[in-house]
Length: 491
Image (cartoon, rainbow, N blue to C red; front, side, top):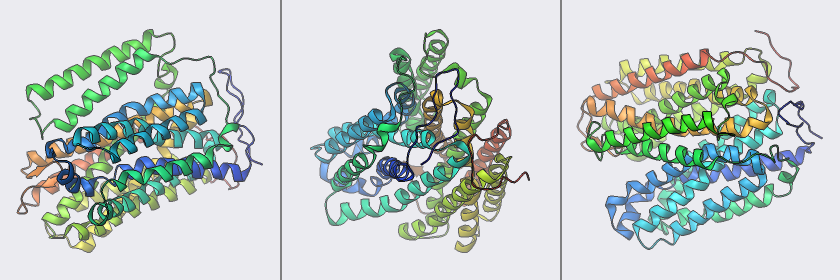
């Protein structure tokens, strides 16, 4: 039988319930399968977009198939953490899966583009919770010292989605029917619910007397949606300094100010001030925000570089991208295994970040005349170095709060991770256009281009990682709770 070492606190938390090893594995497998739904749906759609446009028409709405999902998924992520703290993990996981599956059915049956965008938005409302809840439930089951190994599994799940998604999406759209990219979610979703149904009943509801701040939730969703619209439209649909973009930014800033005021005045704020004022949470979430901005940015513009400068085809550039992907998985796995063995575990991530920054610098230097082998080696090392940070940041944040605030803290971490992805694409897109790279909607407009814009992109990405390293260095050391079967090395 398995039990964590968490003890009761003054906040009313209780020790983790006794769960057998088989039950624990079933829960982890089930929540990772549910998270695979959300991860797969972010990668499986892109290859099918041209086919969908031909089938449904109204191609001008095509970007909203991606943007609609991103808006609702990002905005809802922090809410699921709080809701699951109040009503229990099992109910909220079921709700998130069912909302996601409802969106999948609406998308699959969509007779036109507008209905498809609606379905994708419903999917995002559920998918935003699946990513956060997987980490929260693992946090319930496993003490922080052992949690890093399970967090690394999340990176593996994302890697599977990154590889399988484009392959499945392209195959379904080209040889079968595009709607299968949504129908495939139903058996996966019901399988996940069946696996976790009974074991999740053992997880307690930690905050039965608490309530949800609906006004705060509305302000958060609205502020996030407007900010994401500004980041997605700025520099593409509208110029960055256009009236439309600036109006979105101004309205978002106003709503963020009202949300901040609500956090101070609400009897029970949506995000606890105790969590927000925790220096480990602040530094850990900031490092994750910046890391995700750099990671997504490089993954978007590296294929363009491979095709425009090295002359690779789309499929060939996808093969070269496997180095970055597999490096990230290897880095996360290594970090997850080493964290329980080390006292000062954040040094793993700091060393990895230094490696990634150095390799990005080298890539910017050789960008003009690099060989495929050089790019493969450097990007693999970039992934290896940056991948070490994901388990460290996640475990540090979860270890910094008691179990009553675990859902809220993890929800905030997931929210900033998603927001960082949107910001990274926008910032590097601005750098690309400022350097003269003819890119529209993430696609190269003209094949002929200079290597200089890509040099600037790699340099900018390195600076983002440098800021993430600075945030990591600010995380105060706190010993991990829980026992381990490994001897702890003092370094």
